[in-house]
Length: 142
Image (tube, rainbow, N blue to C red; front, top):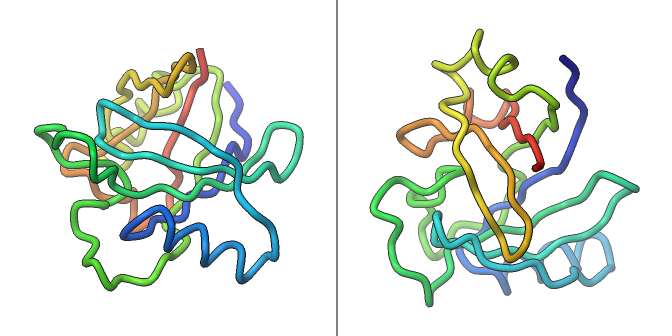
Protein backbone atom coordinates (compact mmCIF):
# COMPACT_ATOMS: atom_id res chain seq x y z
CA UNK A 1 0.00 0.00 0.00
CA UNK A 2 1.47 3.32 -1.05
CA UNK A 3 0.27 6.86 -1.60
CA UNK A 4 1.60 9.97 -3.29
CA UNK A 5 0.38 13.48 -3.99
CA UNK A 6 -2.17 13.45 -6.81
CA UNK A 7 -3.44 17.01 -6.75
CA UNK A 8 -4.18 20.18 -4.82
CA UNK A 9 -7.77 21.43 -4.76
CA UNK A 10 -8.69 25.10 -4.76
CA UNK A 11 -12.36 25.75 -4.03
CA UNK A 12 -14.11 28.87 -5.24
CA UNK A 13 -17.65 30.19 -5.27
CA UNK A 14 -17.56 30.00 -9.09
CA UNK A 15 -15.10 28.63 -11.62
CA UNK A 16 -14.20 31.94 -13.28
CA UNK A 17 -13.32 33.55 -9.93
CA UNK A 18 -11.17 30.57 -8.95
CA UNK A 19 -9.32 30.53 -12.26
CA UNK A 20 -8.75 34.30 -12.17
CA UNK A 21 -7.24 33.86 -8.69
CA UNK A 22 -4.79 31.18 -9.87
CA UNK A 23 -3.88 33.18 -12.98
CA UNK A 24 -3.21 36.30 -10.91
CA UNK A 25 -0.98 34.39 -8.48
CA UNK A 26 0.82 32.04 -10.89
CA UNK A 27 0.55 33.92 -14.18
CA UNK A 28 -0.77 30.92 -16.11
CA UNK A 29 -4.14 29.92 -17.55
CA UNK A 30 -5.86 26.72 -16.49
CA UNK A 31 -6.91 24.04 -18.95
CA UNK A 32 -10.48 22.78 -19.37
CA UNK A 33 -11.50 20.06 -16.97
CA UNK A 34 -15.10 18.96 -16.95
CA UNK A 35 -18.19 18.23 -14.91
CA UNK A 36 -18.65 15.85 -12.00
CA UNK A 37 -22.33 14.88 -12.41
CA UNK A 38 -22.56 12.98 -9.12
CA UNK A 39 -21.41 16.05 -7.13
CA UNK A 40 -22.88 18.87 -9.23
CA UNK A 41 -19.45 20.47 -9.63
CA UNK A 42 -17.04 21.30 -12.43
CA UNK A 43 -13.34 22.10 -12.64
CA UNK A 44 -10.35 23.39 -14.56
CA UNK A 45 -6.83 22.04 -14.24
CA UNK A 46 -3.17 22.98 -14.26
CA UNK A 47 -0.53 20.28 -14.70
CA UNK A 48 2.23 20.61 -12.08
CA UNK A 49 4.18 17.50 -13.08
CA UNK A 50 3.80 14.17 -14.89
CA UNK A 51 1.16 12.88 -12.45
CA UNK A 52 0.39 15.92 -10.29
CA UNK A 53 -1.94 18.81 -10.91
CA UNK A 54 -3.78 21.76 -9.43
CA UNK A 55 -7.57 21.74 -9.61
CA UNK A 56 -9.91 24.70 -9.33
CA UNK A 57 -13.34 23.35 -8.45
CA UNK A 58 -16.71 25.05 -7.99
CA UNK A 59 -20.39 24.23 -7.91
CA UNK A 60 -21.70 23.94 -11.46
CA UNK A 61 -24.65 26.35 -11.68
CA UNK A 62 -26.13 24.34 -14.58
CA UNK A 63 -26.08 21.01 -12.70
CA UNK A 64 -28.84 19.68 -10.52
CA UNK A 65 -28.21 19.43 -6.78
CA UNK A 66 -26.70 16.01 -6.01
CA UNK A 67 -29.15 15.26 -3.19
CA UNK A 68 -26.27 14.91 -0.74
CA UNK A 69 -23.55 17.18 0.63
CA UNK A 70 -20.98 18.05 -2.04
CA UNK A 71 -17.33 17.24 -1.50
CA UNK A 72 -14.69 19.69 -0.22
CA UNK A 73 -17.25 21.51 1.95
CA UNK A 74 -18.51 23.30 -1.13
CA UNK A 75 -22.11 23.66 0.05
CA UNK A 76 -20.91 26.09 2.71
CA UNK A 77 -19.16 28.56 0.37
CA UNK A 78 -20.78 31.98 0.29
CA UNK A 79 -20.82 33.81 -3.05
CA UNK A 80 -18.24 36.26 -1.72
CA UNK A 81 -15.88 33.61 -0.30
CA UNK A 82 -12.41 34.13 -1.76
CA UNK A 83 -10.88 31.16 -3.60
CA UNK A 84 -8.63 29.13 -1.33
CA UNK A 85 -6.52 26.02 -1.19
CA UNK A 86 -8.93 23.61 0.47
CA UNK A 87 -7.14 20.29 0.56
CA UNK A 88 -4.68 17.92 -0.96
CA UNK A 89 -5.57 14.62 -2.58
CA UNK A 90 -3.35 11.56 -2.16
CA UNK A 91 -3.32 8.86 -4.84
CA UNK A 92 -3.25 5.29 -3.62
CA UNK A 93 -3.33 1.87 -5.22
CA UNK A 94 -5.49 0.45 -2.39
CA UNK A 95 -8.09 3.01 -1.35
CA UNK A 96 -10.08 0.55 0.75
CA UNK A 97 -7.06 -0.67 2.69
CA UNK A 98 -5.68 2.84 3.11
CA UNK A 99 -8.97 4.33 4.30
CA UNK A 100 -9.90 1.47 6.62
CA UNK A 101 -7.87 2.81 9.55
CA UNK A 102 -9.10 6.40 9.13
CA UNK A 103 -12.61 6.06 7.67
CA UNK A 104 -14.09 8.26 10.41
CA UNK A 105 -11.81 11.07 9.17
CA UNK A 106 -11.70 10.60 5.39
CA UNK A 107 -15.12 9.02 4.81
CA UNK A 108 -16.19 6.24 2.51
CA UNK A 109 -14.66 5.53 -0.89
CA UNK A 110 -17.22 6.43 -3.55
CA UNK A 111 -17.19 5.97 -7.34
CA UNK A 112 -16.88 9.15 -9.41
CA UNK A 113 -16.66 10.12 -13.08
CA UNK A 114 -15.76 13.09 -15.24
CA UNK A 115 -16.25 12.42 -18.92
CA UNK A 116 -14.38 9.21 -19.73
CA UNK A 117 -12.37 9.25 -16.49
CA UNK A 118 -13.42 7.20 -13.48
CA UNK A 119 -12.04 6.85 -9.99
CA UNK A 120 -12.88 6.19 -6.35
CA UNK A 121 -12.49 8.99 -3.85
CA UNK A 122 -13.10 9.27 -0.13
CA UNK A 123 -15.81 11.71 0.93
CA UNK A 124 -17.04 12.26 4.48
CA UNK A 125 -20.82 11.77 4.67
CA UNK A 126 -21.32 15.45 5.56
CA UNK A 127 -19.12 16.63 2.65
CA UNK A 128 -16.58 18.23 4.98
CA UNK A 129 -12.85 18.35 4.48
CA UNK A 130 -10.91 15.66 6.38
CA UNK A 131 -9.54 17.41 9.47
CA UNK A 132 -10.45 20.77 7.87
CA UNK A 133 -8.15 20.04 4.92
CA UNK A 134 -5.07 19.04 6.89
CA UNK A 135 -5.67 15.33 6.23
CA UNK A 136 -5.82 14.22 2.62
CA UNK A 137 -8.71 13.09 0.56
CA UNK A 138 -7.79 9.68 -0.91
CA UNK A 139 -8.19 8.82 -4.59
CA UNK A 140 -7.67 5.67 -6.64
CA UNK A 141 -7.83 6.02 -10.40
CA UNK A 142 -9.44 3.21 -12.42
